[in-house]
View 1 (cartoon, rainbow, N blue to C red):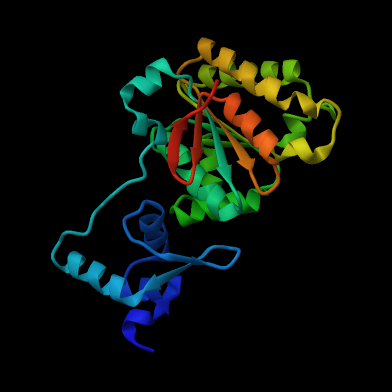
View 2: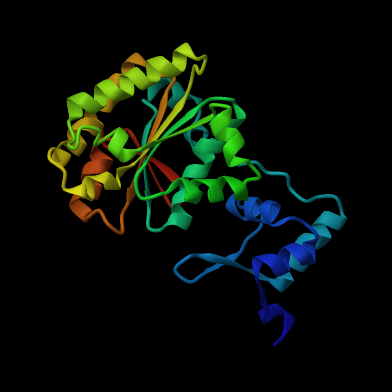
Length: 259
């Protein structure tokens, strides 16, 4: 096989460049270095010729040091003041889920602001793996208070059912509590697949989403990111999500929603 046709694994590419796998993952996530995604897990594969060109740039001292940018910066500074920070993000698998969410998390983590993460499909071990790829110690993130994990049955479905009124009160109290601890601009994130639990009241999901926008009028410095797995949500529900959020992100592009 010719060099230009050879694809290297993550381990092989890291060894070729003489860098850690964490750095290599970060560069691909941030668009600094291209890669191919293979299989249902989206495993990274690297073109040997592209790695050689990247290595030459490093030898010349021009390797870019690009950090993940907070997605809301993409629409300009007016977005953060005139638009509610309520975003629906769409993904099709766990690899895409982290790639779309990581910029929100990393921005707040670096700003020493808490991420209040309500998880459903993602076990804590998956979240720990995601943070490890960024060089972040999961245990330290939780101990420091910069990451708080809350399972869906202790948030959205705490009484065994869903109520838009109860959940809005829960989010409001969470924000007040974080502010009292000194987290002035926290991130609240929720995995929305609890909807498929068939618990009573789940049909109020989009009413809840619409009313979150009004809650953010009271707390405009808070960012809320709602994560929708579109391999599970049908087109009608996906459209409803677009219509209940002022912002939406798909495949790395941020757009205005219809709310």
